[in-house]
Image 1: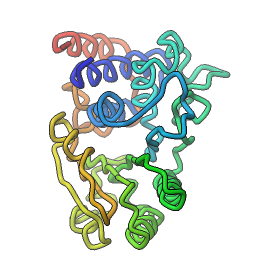
Image 2: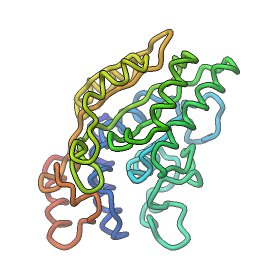
Image 3: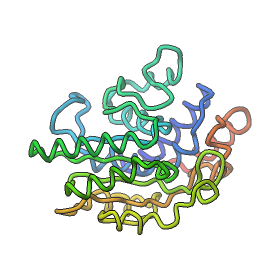
Length: 267
């Protein structure tokens, strides 16, 4: 499967799952579809037949509300049957709205913003102390960068030279009810991370080649931060850059139109 095919499948599952469960955050899911696709399809070392293999790379989705992207990637890597996606957000299902560690292949239940990146840094520290060779990735939102714990983690990871740690910022410039700059000004994210001592890469978060190159980049002494410029709702025209799709689910004509747009660009 190509990265393009994987990204398309994640978007397809996102529309189907949020439609069926009448759940939210489809904009955030589509925003990270390309990054998640490259991570699972080509970059990370994962073991679907042995999800807890000690040699696996670890991925923490700190912005846990976009968990459908991870569920979709895992199902395409054969961690669990595709039919299980139909239970998303159903009563008693392990496929909860925010990503859950009960799902094979998921490292941590997340959703309290700022917590996932902190745990990921702890995992990176533990791996360094134990002289393990796996890599830890954490994906956070730009709105999540309002959380103080993000910057405490940034200081910690730089101080202990966690070169086995990569953070990806989904910089789609929308959060909750408005633009990030209208909520709490982020100013220059790249410069912020550089000042905190990180090796920073700035990319187009929908360019698969740029994503792969950045995710494979290593610094022998520093943690890496990838600031990925993305579009919330990417892939469905009427959802793009529309903050309402942080809360709405595709129903009725919106569902039909979203399906049709995706089918028209199927790889």
